[in-house]
Length: 391
Image 1 (cartoon, rainbow, N blue to C red):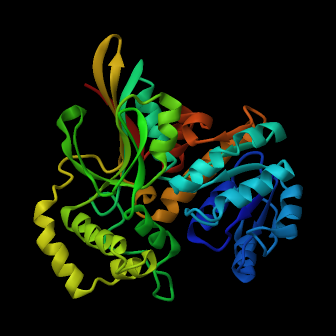
Image 2: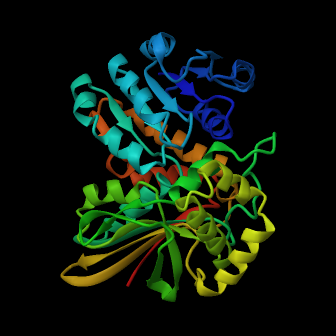
């Protein structure tokens, strides 16, 4: 297959494209991005598969349409945020080109799910949100929900600054010292209102709501809600009857500082961009406010770093199922690996069977989670595994 990779010089794209270059069935990769020099450099680094430079106009227009028409599948890593997803997916459907992205925006996810009928009519298979969260988180949820006959509550959680995650504020700024776009978008995820499931129905609630959890194996602690799209898709896939939300596993100090930023964004004192700058270089005033507020925030306790937990009924009895990553690996040490590797492993399944079930699908509806985690274990040399525990 010929793969069109959008977002060449970005850290996530570099990881995803390098892994994709080693996939069976990939015969050429076309690297495209606004930064032609960086895209050209990446194309020159790839080993084992022909690579060439693609279009500069990666967000739309005739050049993108022509590049899509020559490709079998597009790997869209232009950004985790809302802007690059829907327009590129529409262009891919028009070109009848299969599609996979790493979008983590719940609003864009809802918009792209609305293109399902058009994709099916065009015979296009699209997988959206195939990164870390969403992506790995959805497949952990699939692993947990598979043990239940009916699902009541379903939560996914990813680590921010706890042991086993990217330490401190490393990687939040670019080479120019400015916050990277993903951090600006994160500030959108922790302000305003976000999508959750409450009482089996879609609801909008403020983010950073504490959720106390008691998990199998005696693990317990508190995590905090964030505006990722897992509740939007998981409720459709598993008919969640109770509660569903995306969670962050975060220390009380960081949760308190995020809450200070949230309040100032909501009051109009900060924008997501200026809040992201405050996150990378905290001011004394906001740091002091957060330090005072931190005493009111509970910690993660013994919660795993990266997990999904489902409650419901199994064999006629109430049950709670926990699926979580174990071990240490570069996968959990940085956003680029945590997002780019799952994207490439998801692309492997799309390449193997592109014609299966056309339409727009979230990871849990399109990716075989058993195969994915087996591939992930092989990629990490066995250092990352999935444990499933039931109580």
